[in-house]
Image (cartoon, rainbow, N blue to C red):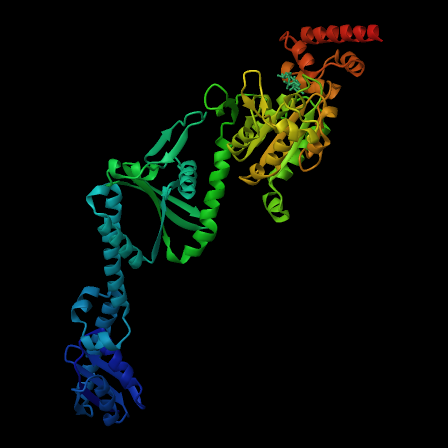
Length: 565
Ligand SMILES: Nc1ncnc2c1ncn2[C@@H]1O[C@H](COP(=O)(O)OP(=O)(O)OP(=O)(O)O)[C@@H](O)[C@H]1O
C-alpha cells in the first residue's frame, strides 16, 4: 500500500470536508486521514500522487506532497494517531462548538461552500436575537407608546417581520371620517373571547343597552387561533399630536388618542387571513352584536325634532306566549326564517330585501303582541309609524329614510290612518290644502306611502319588515294588499281552545284541568278575544278560581249572544 502525505492548510471543518471530498474522487484510494494539527492529509492506497495533489490544489494552491511511501513503524504510529483523531473529530462533530468555528471560519470556505450546520445554527441564533430585540422594542412601544417615535417603531416592526417572516395587519379605528367596521368587529369579537386568562379587560355599559360590554384593553395582547393557525392581536393606542383646535371637525381627528389593532401572523397565512379569517370575524361580531342587542322601540318625537326617538322595548312577548293556532305560528316562523336567510336570493332576483305582513282581526286578538314577539325573536328594532301624525309625503320620506336596517316598520290601524282607499283621489288629496287659519298643508297619500316603501327606502340597507295592522281588512285598497307589498296576511282571530291552552300555561302554569272541557265547549260558541280570556285568567293566582271566573265570563257571553239572536 502506498502512503502519500500532502501538506495543506486546514483551517476549519469545512476545509477538511472539502479536501476529503476532492481526494475521494481519485481512483484507488483506500483511506484518507486528515491531521488538522499538522495541516497534513495522508492518503493510503494505489492512487496516483500526482492526481491527488492536483485535486488538493484545486482547493489550496499552496498544497505540496511531503512524502510518498510508508514505513511500518510510521504506519503503526499513524494508526494510533488516526484513531485518536477520529475520536477527537467525533467529539467535535457531536458538540459543534459554533463559536470556535465562527472565529476560525476561513473566507474561502465562506464563499465557496454551503453553510455548515454550525453556521446555520449561528445564523439562526443571530437572527432570533435580532428579532427578539426588535420584537421587544415593538412590545415596549405598545406599553410605553409615546417614548418611541412612530418612524422608529415602524422600522423595527418591519425589521421584526422580515426576520421572522411575519406580516402585520393594521386595523385602524377610523376609515377617514367614518368608523372602521372592521375595527368595531375585532373589538366585539375579541371581547367575546377574553377568557379568565386575560390580565386586563375593559368593561362598560352602553347607554340604552341592558348588557355590559367587555372589550380588550389597550396594549394587551390576545392570542387567537382559527383553522389551526395562531394569531396575535394587540390593541395599540397612541397620542394624537394634532391639536384639537387646529383639526378639522371630525370625530377621528378630534380624539386625543388614536387606536388601532395589530394582527401578527406568519406571512404564509396572508391569503387565508384576508379571504377567510377577517370575514369570519365580521360575521361573528354581527352575530354577537345581534345576540346582545337590546331591542328598541322608536316613535316619532312630535314635541321635539319630529324625528325618531327611542326607548328600550321591554315587552316580554315571545312566540311561546302568543295565543294563536300552532299551525299558523309554525308557518309564520318558517316564513321569517326563509326571509332572513335569503339575502343572496333577493340580490340575485333583483328585489329589495323586504317582507310585508298584514295582521288583521278584531281588537284584542294579539296583533301588537305578535309584533313584539317577532321583534324579540329577530332582535329587530320597531319603528312605530303613526301616519296620522305625519304632515306630508316629504315628512314621511324623511322618517322612512331615518329608520335603521334589520328593523320592523309598524303602521298600526292603517285603515284609520289616512285616505288610503282610493289611489285615484290621491292626486287631489296630495295637493296643498288651505286650512281655516290660512296654513297650507298636504297629506300623506297611499301613492306616497307605497312609492316610498317600494322604492328608495326598501333598497337602502339590509332586511326590513313592514307590518300593517287593521281591524277591517275589507276597507283597504287592493294595491296595498297585493304580494310584494303585504306578502303574508295573518288573521288574528277570537280565542280558540288551542289559544286558551297557551294562555293557561302562560298565566296559570297548568297544562290540564277538569274545567278545560267546559271552557272548550263555550269557546266554540262565543267570540271571546285572547285579551278577554287573558284578563279573566289574571284575576286570581289560584288556577281553580281563575278558571271558574273564566267559565262564568264565557257563560255570560253565551247568554248575551243567545239573547241577541
Ligand atoms: N293572541 C294573544 N296571545 C297572548 N296574549 C294576547 C293575545 N291577544 C291579546 N293578548 C293580551 O291582550 C292584550 C291586548 O292585546 P293586543 O294589544 O296585542 O291586541 P291587538 O289585537 O293589537 O288590539 P288592537 O287591535 O286594539 O290594537 C295584550 O297585552 C295581551 O296581554
